[in-house]
Length: 55
Image (cartoon, rainbow, N blue to C red; front, side, top):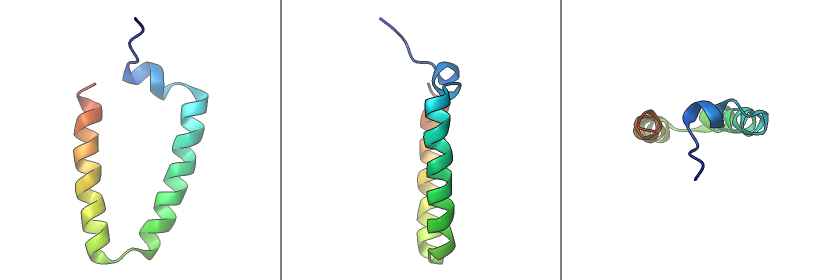
């Protein structure tokens, strides 16, 4: 069984390409978001960051 560790996933160029695209989309959405939407996005980011840390 292959275990996909954070280092193995994050180092992949295909993954990095998707990440760059998503960062661009989120930056654009953030520019148009209300204060409440930004607050909720920050909460979600914090939670998902914890899950990634747990890998």
